[in-house]
Image 1 (cartoon, rainbow, N blue to C red):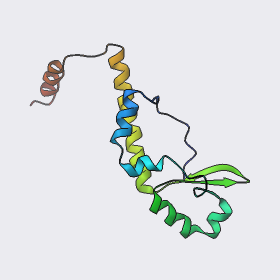
Image 2 (image 1 turned 30 degrees about the horizontal axis):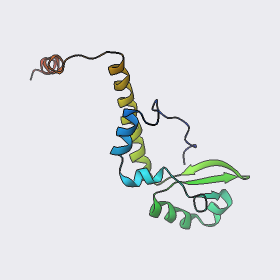
Image 3 (image 1 turned 120 degrees about the vertical axis):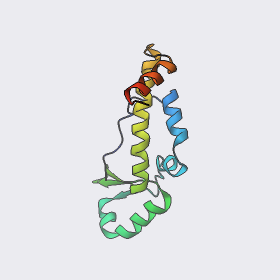
Image 4 (image 1 turned 180 degrees about the vertical axis):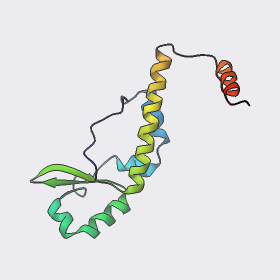
Length: 124
């Protein structure tokens, strides 16, 4: 389980980095970002009584399940493979966002200069 999402990792919807990351994500990860209000919100009591059924549902749909306590969202359960892919995508998004900021602020250099430095540093 992990807390409900709230960090956008420096990305804004519609930015180049956001779109690149979204387009690079496998379909199962993209579909896991949405939930079915009728099927994917369950109480902790439901989880206790129907653990196997809920876990099977998560694995089959690739969607997270929001767990509620006293009627309020408390935690989210997500398929481990989907979570791993989302972590990779978020890390890539963070790197792309930093790079996009550097390009916007003019912190660039010619590719040839970078490659020469890279080769010299590694004795290639």
